[in-house]
Image (cartoon, rainbow, N blue to C red; front, side, top):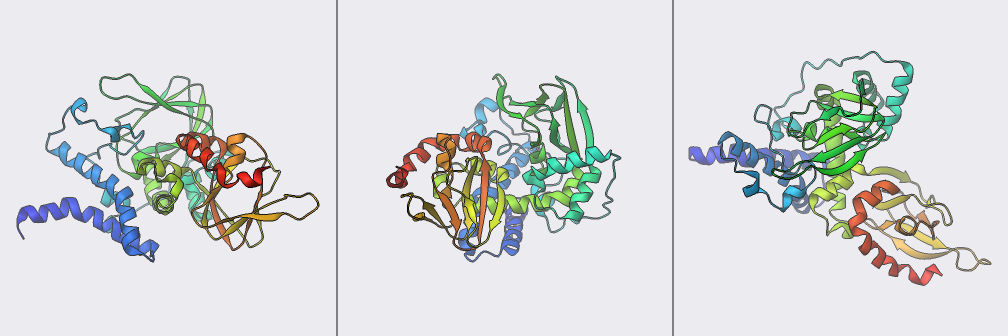
Length: 374
């Protein structure tokens, strides 16, 4: 094999195949081919994009933003951000077989009991930490620092290296992004309970946006070392699990992989036993559900003198709960677990923010319920 072929394998092929192999070993999917295709189309594409940017950086061949921008540049946060050359590659830092975790000594930052309780509450609201066991959660809480910010403080700046992630305890922060030759564009407002800054740590990329305190704020900060040793693996496993699931949800086929990854980050999970009510007819509806595992039925009282009747069957990949959210009305039917079920869900605010572009599709799909609505 020629040197240029070996270099190509080393720099372009091995980083992706190494992570794919580890993903397959961890997840053990029944259909390896299909699982590989889905993984390559989402995570593999992100890694390859970062590798190409890194090569361009070293070769000093980066063209001007006006010449290289594509539709993909509209991905709000990380899809096209170059990997920093002074850090390990994505394959090494994210999963790499040779990236051994050694000499990690958890740090302990003194905090009051009240601050510890507030950190626990905020961690419970963040997808990033939901897969941690009690031991790892305690390490994270001990390592977190309390940051006091004043109105106008820049917490992270687009293009900078990132060594911390943040969770908002009090106050709101503006997130914006600037493209070459254009004005800054507002992306979102961060509120208490939300986290930011993790993408630079997960994907070893520079900050993809600028975040500024809109008022006096209190943040909880976690350093890169603790994140890498305690949080990253669990967060990546969760993200890939949900990205794989969402790629098979018919409703989301029109979304690009990055948009699905945003949904994956926001999902929370809950298990139900046979006969459990997932939602109850007449209750207030603030949650939108995807059925990840199992089967469920929808029941509705069609005649007040008769028991509720089964009106719909749900299988894996189906969704429900959208009527109450879109119409701001009580639940139109009950949904009951027919088998042990796992659902993943979004709250009302996240539903509107992430699935807003699909509202027309959701509304059109009301027809499947119409004969039971009156």
